[in-house]
Each structure stands twice: as C-alpha cells, then as structure tokens.
Image (cartoon, rainbow, N blue to C red; front, top):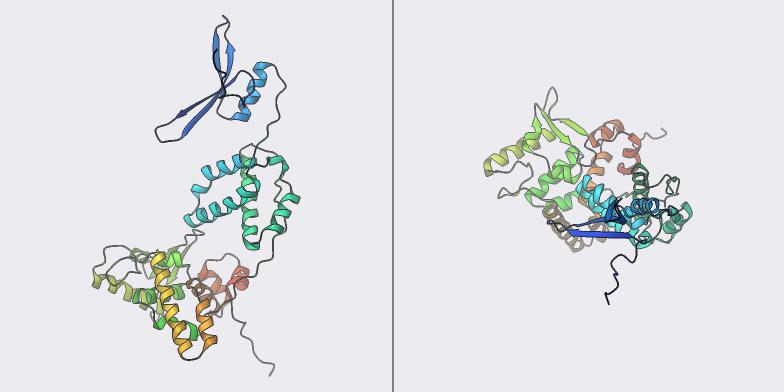
Length: 355
C-alpha cells in the first residue's frame, strides 16, 4: 500500500505546496491547484507564492466559498524586518530589531484583526520598561501603516492615539569641575573628540565621522547621520579665528605630522581613526580615574557626578552654555527650538534680579 502523503495536510484539498532551496540558502515556496486540463489530463495550476492569496484562487477553482484571510502578526513582522528595516540607519536598525524582538514575544502568533487599542494599552501597562514600551508601540504603529500601504489590511491603525508612558528627559549637566576632572585623564584623541563635540554641538557619531575634506572655504561641514540635515559651521569671523577654527587647524596639522592615511580628523597618535568602541573605552577609563581621584580627595559628591557623565552629555552641555536659544537650536540642527529647550538645555535661564 502506498503511504499517505503528509506534506500538504495543512492545505485545502487539491492544493499542493512546492518548495525549493536556492543557491543563496533561501527557501522558494509556491502553491498549485491539482487540476485537469480540457483533455482530462492532470495539470498543476499556479496559485502564487502567498498562501492567503493562493487559498482565494483555490476557492475559485474548487467552487468553494472564499476563505477569510487571517494574517498573523508574525508574518507582518517578517516582511517589515525584511523589506523596511534594512533601509534605515545602522543604529535605528539595531534599535528596531531589539524592539521587534519584544513585540514578537507578545504578538507573533496573534491574528492582525485581534490587535486593538485596548490590547496595546494592556501591553503598555504590563511592560516593565516604560520608555521601551513607548518605542515598541511607535514601531508597531509604523508596521501597521506599512501593512495598509501594502494592501494587507484596510483597518484603522490600532496604535493611533494610544497614550504613551511619561518620559523624563535626562537632565545631567557636566559642569566645569566634572569636565576638567575627566579631561585631565583623557588621552589626546579623547580630548580632541571632547573638544570637537563641545565646540560643534554634534552627536558622538558625527564627531567621529568628521573628515579633513569637510573643511571647506572657512567652514566645517556636517551632514548629520541621524537626520541627514546639513550644517556649515563658520571657523572664523571677520576679525579672528574661532576656538573651533583653532582646533580644526591643529587637527589638520596633527594629521600631516603623523602621516595619517585615513580621512578622519579624530585619530590616535599612531594614525588610526577612532571608532565608537575605542571612544567608549577611552572615555570610561578617563572617567574611572577621575572618579577615583575625587574619592581620594574625599569628595564623594563630585565622584558620583563624574560617574554619571557620558560622552553624549557633551552635546547638551554645548546647548546649555550658549545664551541665545535660537543659536543653540541652529547649531544642534533642530528645526524646533522647543526640542533644544526641553531636552538639551540643562541649566537654568539667565535672568536679572528684581533690583
């Protein structure tokens, strides 16, 4: 007796699944209807590569009621991860994949139709990471918007209007004592990075990505990696060279003296460009030594403040120490001064006394 076929038992009658492994390792899948031609000979009629669409075509051929298409969230996550995430910036890709991992735990096997605002509100409230929950729901909102564009659903986006958990912006300010303590123990390349970050107000990644060729006609040019916004920071005024101009001149001379072959401004003494990992190690080391020295001097308050200092705090330090809010906002590349005011200004506004 011929053994029973089990490969297509999950499919409707007379539907066949064909799979083939490609050279690149991916699995090709297609569906067919086991039918007959006009002469009564067996013929496999192509139904496509999408199972839901294939079932609709099968129903037409088999004269059955068209089945209701039920999409699982996992299928939607797979397509978003395959088609959308690779087009984003590297850091955003990393964040999205981490957020998607959490969303999969809760929704991977859930039908799309069952995802409602109430379900998402419950997810928000049960997540221990409140800020992460906000990011995950924001990503889920974009996933649903993409599903609408792809024609997978025409339902309203269930994430629209969901209340977010309250977020408190980081308010650490690296005052002169903290800055000087870490700067004292910094390597030469870390000092260069700290100075360039402070004088330009740019993000750490953009500081490290600055090239010698970005110095053009008296300006230091930036194309911000996160927003792609372009900036030109003036290196000198009509009467004198700015501190940034002096720093850039020194870095360019330094490159020439060291025979640097790579294009970057921030380099080690042996001519290597400083990577984010290298910057992190050097900053952590300088911070640890500065905190240890503060403890030796019996200043535990300063030591605790030094331990909280992160390289990313240099950008808000720059924004906080520029009196003109509009100038600070333009330097940081913000289109809305309120972002600079609420997130990056970490010292009180300068005011006059009553008398």
